[in-house]
Length: 217
Image (cartoon, rainbow, N blue to C red; front, top):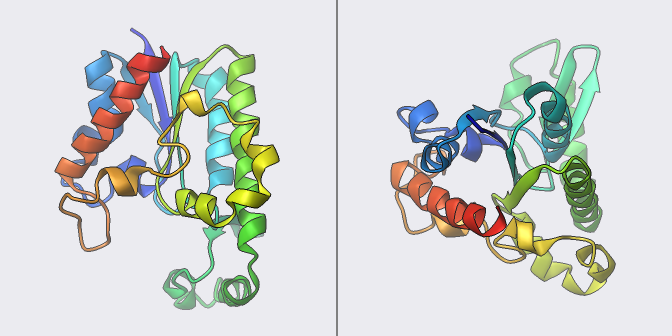
């Protein structure tokens, strides 16, 4: 049986669904394709996590199809003696504020909230897209990419100053490029209290990606 490997943030994990393993869009796409699924969607992660996981998955799982669902380019991965963690401008400090050992991380959140550079964040993500795209092509792995939220809005904001990067992206493998993603695909469906799409939204996301898989395979 062929293998589908998916990676992304909480939208790929299926957060707020009653049964994420059965109801999230990766499972729905895998069932439509008749593939075995390995889903490494993880809530709260940034794109560096997706890059690392995708690179390691090629040798570990040898997937036939990879779907990378890019999260907001504003999320940043950091590490200290206590481990690796992701933060982003304006993110909640509650996850660290109650922990006397990790509380100092809140100062970094406050700093990047005030001093982050959106153009730099966006360009960093564009480079990640090109690098993973070329990595998968080098291994002759079929792949699809899409955005969850935020990145498509920055395309409009920084369109004129990033043309050299855009020329490097294979938009035939990037569903919704450059102006829409999962937020748009599920915007007319019910969402949970945390803002995540529920079962109907995941069905619409899965349909969009399944259609693209038939085009690109």
